[in-house]
Length: 213
Ligand code: HEM
Image 1 (cartoon, rainbow, N blue to C red):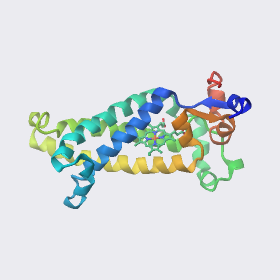
Image 2: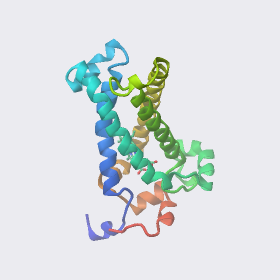
Image 3: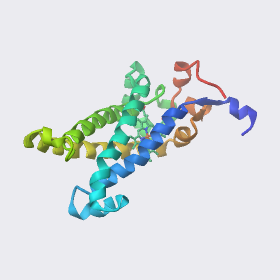
Image 4: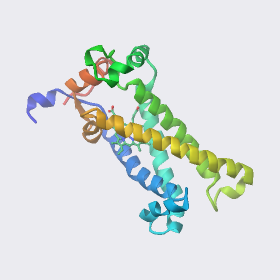
């Protein structure tokens, strides 16, 4: 990359957050595969990543915690980027232009668009419910401290939260793939100023102190 291009780049994701994010993706894969292997007998093969069904049962809660704790940390670190702003409503009302990529008609937005902010809230809710219910149903360590009714409800809520999180992760993956340059931003940390002007124009104003390289 030439010196000129380098000056046009800004930092969007710090190294710590990128490590957190890709660690979450890696352990999240193990969590989801082992977790869904318990859903139906015909899904059991998904747990093969753990070796045996017994190992899948042992690994799942540990992988789940290793996914949810860094996720919560990342969500706390990204909270300030995900507050609702006045300009978000205008963007939502222009959702048709967003979908059809009528760029000149899309109202400017900041670091994240309202779609990403909705996903953020879904990740907050599901990571909390999965962790709390996961502890309540964790045999043989924590479940004996709760009544059978509480454990039963925890199992139902855990399954519903997992399905909701999976659905939102799929939307998240689709949105990330749709916006060219977004995945490289999460991989290498930087995006070009031209990218910001196109996808998140107000980001440059919000972060006038943004690190330049
Ligand atoms: C292979 C799957 C995934 C890909 C390709 C991916 C990609 C990305 C990208 C490109 C961004 C930055 C978006 C931007 O700069 O505008 C991002 C942000 C983020 N990702 Fe992922 N991601 C994946 C899976 C996950 C999973 C499984 C989780 C957690 C359940 C997750 C949680 C987050 C969070 C919390 C953010 C910050 C978003 C915000 O603050 O609103 N990602 N991801």
